[in-house]
Image (tube, rainbow, N blue to C red; front, side, top):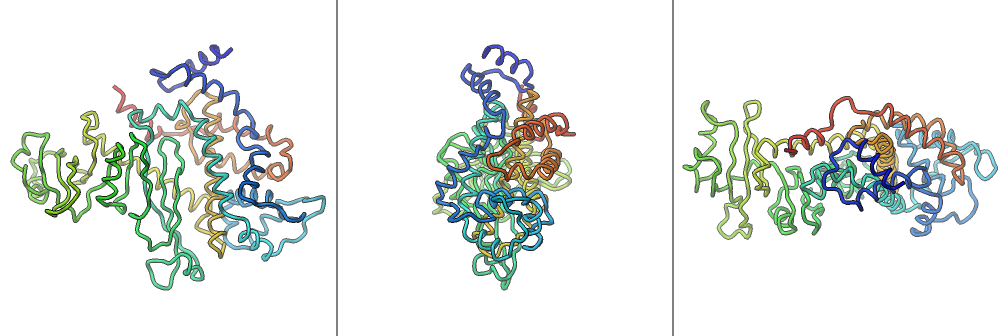
Length: 459
């Protein structure tokens, strides 16, 4: 039976299975059987274990139990307008709570909900997110490893600012005096298309203080210019990993070697000496040289890095990287860096589609709950997409998040009582139907940038 399953997987899977071990294929076949119900993704027992782990329990029987509060916060992210005010959020809760503990819920005060936002630790929501992320990684397994095979993972590093009410200035100070804002610094996996690390800080904290580099080798980091620092580059290089960043405008690197004979005359000169020549009509449309970044004689940053430049719409764009493999041509490095735009799309989804722009909490704990509620719904959607892809023998990159989320949103609103029931009676059947619908209707209209780039890298 196992060999038959593996054979069917290899026949149906659009990704190239070359190089897969029997263990990888066995794992994939086992996962297809294991993750077949919602309970396999997040069971009652697993959720209760996380409640116990973070010491969050109901001290007495009450209308708004921790379990119900948790799910309503997550599912409220399906309705952007709900986060417009505390009263709207209360309205969503009351409309979703037909019966709790055998009694109809006729009222829910702002004080009661505010207490829950302040007393239920946001670490619980982060713990559930990490638990679900681990399940999601295992679910993708062999498939996600096939994209950008040269790297164990590829990350887009970026941050986004969310404005808050002035009363929260003591927690989240803004760069603008008298205002409040927070910053989401994210480590976004391009293979998983999900956040693997999040840091929430004040809006005035500099991006360079976000620590995301691990000791794991063969990672690729596509980094926004706001994180520019020699210290960061050194950490990545010392870990045996790779990065691509845009060149800082104030940086004037020294050219120490060239890969194109016509640039030999510029060895020993600064990039600024090259700019006049590059703007001539007869100049090439790309350059590829080796440089030293620091101009200080006593600088400890002595690494020689690769500088590539491309002429795009009449302007030169320069990028710094430590990738020297010739397979990564200047054009491919440019295409790689363009993948960083996927994290911008993620921010748009989180802030607008999942309503983070309408944060209503007035405490740091409540704000963190709202942030992780949106992240959980985003990840839950991707789990459904992964199951749908597995069902069709395709890559998850063949599916559209926007379409899948709209389908999930409709199913959630129609069956929200099943999420709140304990145990989850009837939810598995609804969840399985959702996966089937996404498998049939959630496909992308255009190819994923990840898949398109992988095709360019494959001989």
